[in-house]
Image (cartoon, each protein chain N blue to C red):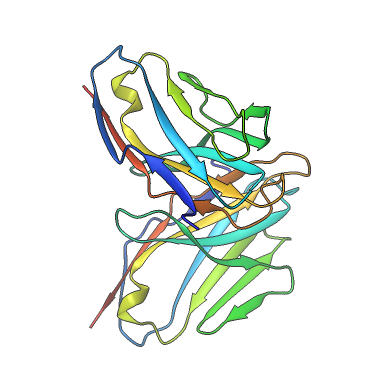
Length: 111
Length: 114
């Protein structure tokens, strides 16, 4: 089983729709969680960190469910510019300075 | 600040050749790392460093060497290139000596081994 698993998609949704992705992780001792965004042929960039209490940044909401070992990303009122690949990232146990990336979920917003 | 820079942007190697991918950052970040990205595989960690003089292996270290003689530079050496090393390579850095903070990625090096 992969350490971090994501549905690769692609997800094709109309502009203005709400879309949600989940990501599961296998190591229950994982410490930190992130969502990164990667545009085609570009480098990944941090979208948001994911906190235990959940957090929101504008149209984006991230949630962490430790009991079920998954994190989620919700995008409301999607824009054409949201088209990208979204990477789920998990940091391992304390002292292990390694990040594990999911394979990414590809999202296309259609006009 | 230039952020994280990588050279070259593109490279074609023949099997058995060696080369060094360069990575530099001007943000005084302690943590630096190298990833490779292959279709359907996501980014996989090759090597990382929590500070000058300290390096450690990631998930896929075989065939690669690193060194960290300065805070700014973290070169990745391919010892004897193989077609399986055809990939996009990203260097990243973050503040402090941990992986707990935002990773800043360079623009990537697209490597083809024939």
